[in-house]
Image (cartoon, rainbow, N blue to C red; front, side):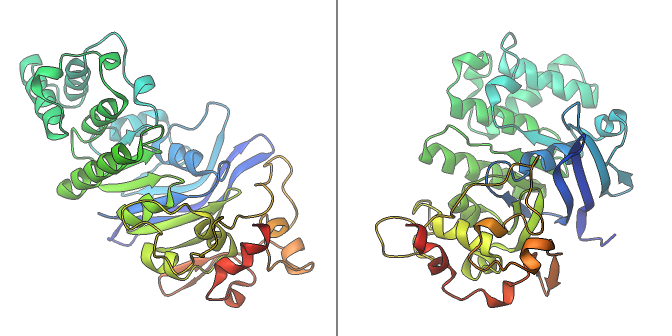
Amino acid sequence: MNPEVLVSVRDLHVSFGAVEAVRGLSFDVRKGEVLAVVGESGAGKSLTARALLGMPPRQASVTGSIQMGPYELAGAPRSVHAALWGRQLALVPQDALSALSPVHRIADQLAAAVRSVDGVSRKEARARAVAALEEVGIPADRTRAYPHEFSGGMRQRAVIAMAMLHSPALVIADEPTTAQDPETQRRLLDLLTHRTEATGTTLVLITHDLPMVRDHADRVLVMYAGRLAEEGPVEEVFTRPRAPYTAGLLASAPRQGRGGLRDHPQRTRRHRLPSIPGTPPNPTNLPPGCAFAPRCPLADATRCATAHPEPETHNNRTVACHHWRKLPANSAELFLESV
């Protein structure tokens, strides 16, 4: 495996019986980067994250390869993942209130996590827990509070502190700022990316917030119906998307964020935003051929309707589209008909 690659995912499938929710996904996570995984609901983003973490739904089958150093994680026993938790793998969940115990104080929960990995004394574990909470902006005199006594933003700070306790090699943040106001979202992502950068931790950010991706990520992986649609450096993908689906996402993104998409060349001066017509397909009834074909302005009735495009890599960009070479520079215009 390339020494610059922390995790190599190849031909990943996550299935529920005959239904494939993630279908042949391949990508690399490079050491020290922020990789954003984006797409509409049902794209398979969170299932991919849970497969990486060894936490797929109980009824799911995971096949393919997830290689992290000497460890093969796809289909590995839970004991393999448990041995990596803390020092190698960590999660910043979407709902901190559900992730934290309601009957234990915040500092006590972090101290228990320290002791479970390092086996230190209670006193030392508590001191390290308080220090970790202070690093994310929670004062020492608040660390004895219970989760319900914190605001939503403070609870997210607490789970960020917990994830970073041992400076793990990889942190996966699954929609970590959901239900927060825009300013709190910005502060939390600034905090998370600052902490991971300071420790050399790699971050995989699962999100649907494109301005957030523009501000905080190095590379972006766009998913649609369980497959890769496009992957590459954020600035290149946002400036000149190659997949029609990516172009539609960028065209329909709201004008928000610090820098965000406000001055993006794909923007339009119309008062209403373009939108992708139709809705994402049901994984139990996927169309033949390219799953995006029924919504795609470039789709034809031959290749697109009968054969799914295989990902093609050129330089540092990967795209899965039969007609990506035909996508115009002003690709947002393709979706203006739906306004």
